[in-house]
Image 1 (cartoon, rainbow, N blue to C red):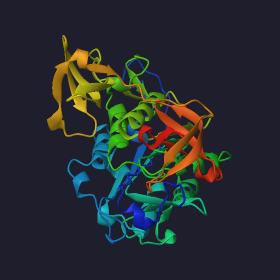
Image 2: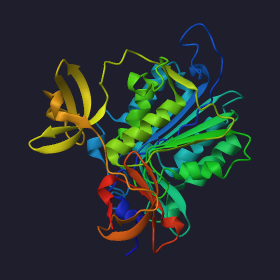
Image 3: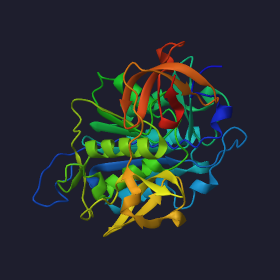
Length: 386
């Protein structure tokens, strides 16, 4: 058995891959107005969004009916519309409308309408998969089948942007299995005239969560959630979004979010003004004692010695008030660089590996009996001392 998180499309049907690929042109124009201080302008922004939660071939790609109510991909599109992006500069292909032919045709026509200084936002939500031998990644549009070529190759996303986009900067955001392939492909294009950055939910070798956690992190940043404002300057910046998403994904999903940007791309671009002041401890990631067991929680509110918490992985109906004495910091076990460990693959077996990096309770490991193409990030539940 191979110790890989890659599986065939038949395996991927049990996973929900949301991919959000966003291309964003930042226009730096300081102004006394807080809104004018933002480093992007809605009138110069073009949003091309794809959201797929059901497929033409459900025997290959499982649908996600539970993800449809209040779906976060639609919320993301609505946010940009409400922020002032003109209707004629927004395309949203949902489910059956997002065939491969329609995506490529619509995107090509869409990009060719842009001009210098334009902001392109390209969003994809759906299934995706990676071929270990060729090391290529595909996004599964509505009519994708069970063959690699039937999907939409990540390289083609870049090719279309390179050939038809007339703007300057491109930020790719992906919430999906193997979404880090967008970072990899971006890095291969260091000589491009476009200025790229990429923010993804997971490393290119890893599968991703079936939840909206990463997309909701993006929404939190764009809405000016004070929890994302790491430096407390009352603005949410791109690098703060990246840091928040990294910590949120590590804590909630046990995944390593990825962020990379060209030297010419403004990592500190202001995305949104902070909406409200942050109450002390609200948003803190911690653990709570309940029925003799410690659970991961997020603090929702504080009232003197009482703390209201949300149990990670549980319904909001389980949110409860508890005493602060039953709350402790979240401190996942960390293994030293070079430590010899065992890692559980998705086939359920444990394989000998060596730790190369450690961050927020996640570990970048190298399998002892395999080459580096199998290296990956693993969460706390998938690693133990050898």
